[in-house]
Image 1 (cartoon, one colour):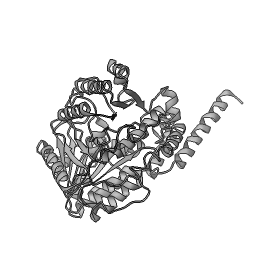
Image 2 (cartoon, helix red, strand yellow):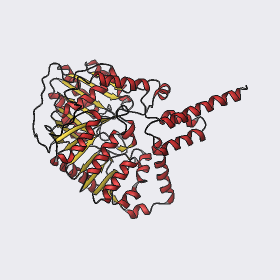
Image 3 (cartoon, one colour):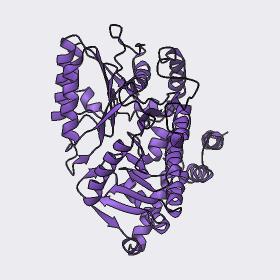
Image 4 (cartoon, helix red, strand yellow):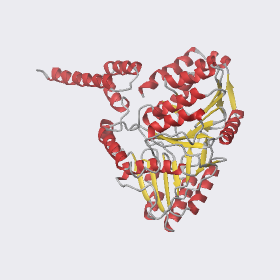
Amino acid sequence: MSLTIFMSVIYYSIVAYILYRVMLRPYREPASRLSWIVIVIALPVVGILLYFMFGETSIGFLREKKMRLLKKKILKSKSKVVSTDFTAKDISPTYKHIFQLAHSINNFTPKNDNSYLLMEDSDAFIEILIQDIMQAKYQIHILFYIWLEDHSGKKVANALIDASQRGVKCRVLVDSLGSRNFINSSTWKQMSQANIEIASSLSIGNPILRVILGRIDLRNHRKIVTIDNTITYSGSQNCADKFFNAKAQWVDIMVRFKGSLALQNQALFLEDWLEATNHTVALYHEDQPALIAVQNSSLDNAAQVVGTGPTERYGAMSDIFQGIIATARKTLIITTPYFVPNEPVLNAICGAARMGVKVKLVLPQKNDSWFVSSTSRSYYAQMLAAGVEIYEYKLGLLHSKIIIIDDELSMIGSANLDRRSFELNYENNIIVHNISFAKTLHARVGQYILDSHKVSKTIVEGWSKPKILWHNLNATLSPLL
């Protein structure tokens, strides 16, 4: 057998193996399977490399096995915040099904003893966070996808150093890719020297080996802060200045919660911490009593954490968005920086508009991803035809992730309406049934709309054929990623 024939046999055996994996991978849409088959066959070698890099939503067999074992290991310590039984006594019957759907993901149950404070802007979040850090007595846990060594990043780090030096147990976890520069900074070293426990999530190691073992771009996109078991922050902001992108300021949403909800966010943090460090941490600090003061207890004041990711139930975040959208009867308001929905979520949005729900979608006019920006616009014609109002925010990169229905139920957090958040990244959101809070969020979105231009059918119908072709081409590629 000649070398050429031998190499051909090896190559086509690899191709056959890849096609075998394409067909056996669970949850893959038929169109996506067909696209990958075409790519692997039509692009010799390159197609195989692309599939290993982007074809599967796996963090790696060994890492996934470890995560599942760790979840069982810490289930006992989570018993204070999880329950295998779902009870509806603390929530309104109107939204019971939404909270029950969220319960099916993490076994968290709705809590009705929380107060809420919407941050005025990114700077206010940093200042109030630092105040809470300065007043902390027992422990502080912080997780960010991006942490930069800029003005805001240093201020938070210095506050943590001071807290650690006065005896507060501080743990900091960052994504190894999103915060790669910070991990190599002098501030990171100073935090370690101050006895702050620091770690990076989903470390890459050898990039070539990581591509073989699992996708390199599956990231921990969560934003979690918990302080003394009673205070937690959730939303879209990273630990960075709002002008960290030189092209435009990032416009974020952050909410400070006080109450037992903090323990649910803390449980998510401790799962990620255990994966990154192999160290188990108790849900409660050993010296701290349960500092949960019940306030605003009401059937109309329920809240619940939702944590999703590649090792959770497939499509969990997509299910949550679909469930909330389908529940809307009067109004549906959505803001997101990255709008690349799957077909069920897109159909749910258009279906709501056709049923008479007033649907408003607010996106950034300029995005930091040309691919996402182009793909998002491929859906405009379909949504406008259904009656969806589309607004493009003009004053920066609108990074807030908000959904509000009927001025009663809302959700904020780290998840976008895109396939990365639905399938690839670890995300954390909070569902809130509180009319006052929903109206406060609605007012914030109203300000976004005042600073936006409305996209009309006339504008979209005036796009050139090459522009439409470009948008649709990118949308066709999006399921592959």
